[in-house]
Amino acid sequence: MELGEGKVAVVTGAGSGIGLALSHAFAAVGCSVVLADVQIDALEKAAHAVGEHGPDTLAVRTDVSSAEQVEELARSTIDRFGAVHAVCNNAGVAGGGDPWLGPIETWEWTMGVNFWGVVHGVRAFLPHLVMSGGGHIVNTASMAGLYPGLAGAYDASKHAVVALTENLYNTVQAAQMPIGVSCLCPGWVRTGIAEAERNWPSEFGDLTPRDAGAQVGWDYLKRAIDEGMPPAAVADLVVDAIGADRYWIFPHPEWVEEIAMERWHRVAEGLDPSPPEEMPGLPPRSQMLAEVMAAMGMTSPGE
Ligand SMILES: NC(=O)c1ccc[n+]([C@@H]2O[C@H](COP(=O)([O-])OP(=O)(O)OC[C@H]3O[C@@H](n4cnc5c(N)ncnc54)[C@H](O)[C@@H]3O)[C@@H](O)[C@H]2O)c1
Image (cartoon, rainbow, N blue to C red; front, side, top):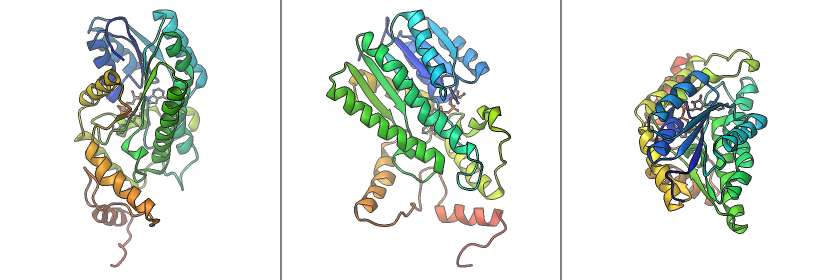
């Protein structure tokens, strides 16, 4: 689909990182942009900055884990612009506690934003995209949607997004709907995701502090993100993919080859999972494990 003047793009998680970069990129090519985010201060700042490109913007405070709020976002979009052409279901969170020993709210938060947010976005906007004469949906998954090795709840939520997006693609193709679909799977991108707990919902109670071992891994993850790809480069790839009607968007294609394919070879051979020793942006796994054990006051196996 060709983006430009007269087209309307909706971005969730538009207040920061990839969503903010997407909003700038859409506005820069002349699209009107609807920015949605749960964090009101970031949303207002983003809408102001994106508005500087010239085209019209609308900011709608939206918690994507709520079906009602995402439906309201769709209604506000149509009320204001009369149509919608590109929808980026991008809002996402990471962290929130230990998936197996921590509170169940870790899962509820992660799945609520990363998984249900995408489901609500597709369901709320698909009819409007069709009624607008056609459009494009971009769902933000992650390399963690193709390789489960980062964090339990996050990996599961992103695998779900990869699966539902592929099903959506097959469905719109079979039904010959005038809808393009893309699945965005980045590796490390320089955003605020390592501080996602800033939006931990108060109704879930207090966050459980990370223990010393988990903090070691988190600090390395934060460093990898801080050294990651600039979000504007990811946004450019998304704009290209919409223009070319391309399904997969891989900002870090080498991860597919080195991490995901290796895992799938093991699956095909029926081998037990074996996390790679080397992950892009992180120290060797054995070093990280030794540091985690030391932080917990334990000795590494073999010592
Ligand atoms: N940064 C990376 O390395 C990386 C890698 C792979 C995938 N991703 C994915 O990219 C997407 C964007 O994240 P980012 O890295 O730009 O992080 P970010 O924290 O910079 O931006 C995420 C935005 O989502 C918003 N948000 C959080 N909860 C929300 C909710 N309930 N409803 C609406 N908005 C909400 C935040 O306020 C924030 O503005 C996420 O889906 C994330 O999982 C990021």
